[in-house]
Amino acid sequence: MRDLLGRNDKTGSSGALHIAVIGSGGAAMAAALKAVEQGARVTLIERGTIGGTCVNVGCVPSKIMIRAAHIAHLRRESLFDGGIAATTPTIQRTALLAQQQARVDELRHAKYEGILEGNPAITVLHGSARFGTIAT
Image 1 (cartoon, rainbow, N blue to C red):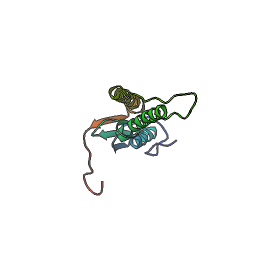
Image 2 (cartoon, rainbow, N blue to C red; image 1 turned 30 degrees about the vertical axis):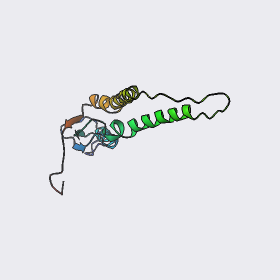
Image 3 (cartoon, helix red, strand yellow; image 1 turned 90 degrees about the horizontal axis):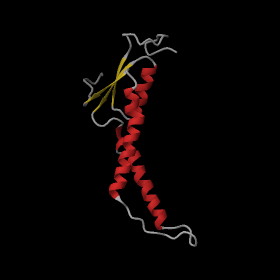
Image 4 (spheres, one colour; image 1 turned 60 degrees about the vertical axis):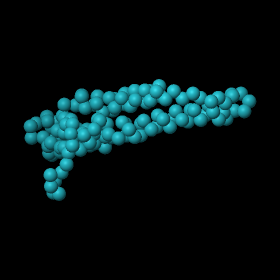
């Protein structure tokens, strides 16, 4: 397989293409890993928390809360009239939020931080990025 410079080897010579990726979410990580696979060096530029919106404040934490609400609903609105009595669940918000944050931290490390730590061809810069000119 050829790398981004058209070479057949995977030596990662000093002439390798260097790519900057703005952000560190799922799409950024996929692009960075694919570029490294093809022989490039990559710099990820992230102004916030590694992992982007989905794992940190979007998809993952919201789905945890949606699942908790669903479980509470099932306990309150029993589907079985004769065998399982409906109960009013007690929501322990502090414990629920701690569980949510622990899962977010676990997934961020497994899906982002751990992969970045194990890949020397990817450098992470913490800060903001912008294009210098319209032609960039």
